[in-house]
Amino acid sequence: MRRKEQDIAAGAPHASRLASRPVKITNATRPLTIEVEAINERGERVPTPIAGEHPLTLYIDKREIVTLMTLGQAPEALALGYLRNQRLVRSIDEIAEVQVDWDTDAVAITTRTALLNLDEKMQKRTVTTGCGQGTVFGNLMDEIDAIRLRDDITLSEATLHTLLDNVRRHETIYKSAGAVHGCALANGSGEILLFIEDVGRHNAVDAIAGQMWLNDIGGSDKIFYTTGRLTSEMVIKAAQMQIPFLVSRSGLTQMGHDIAVKTGITMIGRAVNKHYLLFTGVQRFIKPAA
Figure 1 (cartoon, rainbow, N blue to C red):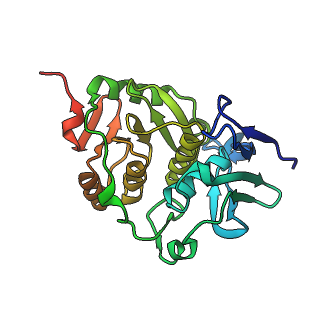
Figure 2 (tube, one colour):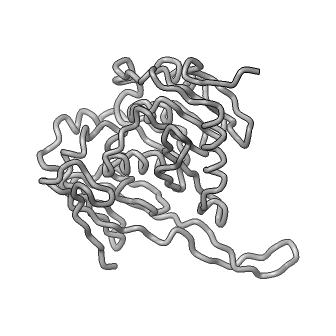
């Protein structure tokens, strides 16, 4: 398969902040669904779309890091977001190239200078509750105490309803094929800025993180929505991206709740239509007077 390449420069789509030092990056999205034959309850043979799933092995400076199972919607952003949320790379400034090759099911990331303490960071590996088993390198609680989220912004109930309605109306792979999780980044008005689906919710949040880097989007005034449950991993990643509002149509875990309290995230679960449960960060949430 021939790889398409584009130079990412300031002002271009998915622009990085380094106009003078562009990131060389592929655009290797795979077909997100394929059609197979199934037999329905009436015994009829019907063509049915199913979600794609592909292995993608991530290499950084020729060193193998991890193999991710992915839908293939945004493999470059997924790789960047994975490194960002694992705290293996601190800034998009450190990245020179991101090259995805589906002939070898690999993504090769080249840094501008060798990463420091990579071996030390990878010594401890925690298998998380993410779909398909997520992985977090290092101590889950590292740096949590240093995270400070903005407390001068609010989320109104009306904006929450707008976001949920926008998500409901958004065209998704889930509606046609199922078997995927979706994540969205929204602005303070509930408008969807980025929407990514993948076979695991941890992949979808990583891809959003990568897109935020490539587009130079800050998270300090944004809302993050996920279809998946709010585990410790999801809350930590949102906090690392400086996002103060975390919304899910699903529930949460005890450790997810504890970390949300510790970081001060406004966390809302079971959010469907007009229903929601506000768990933490109530000081940022504005509800109309009865």
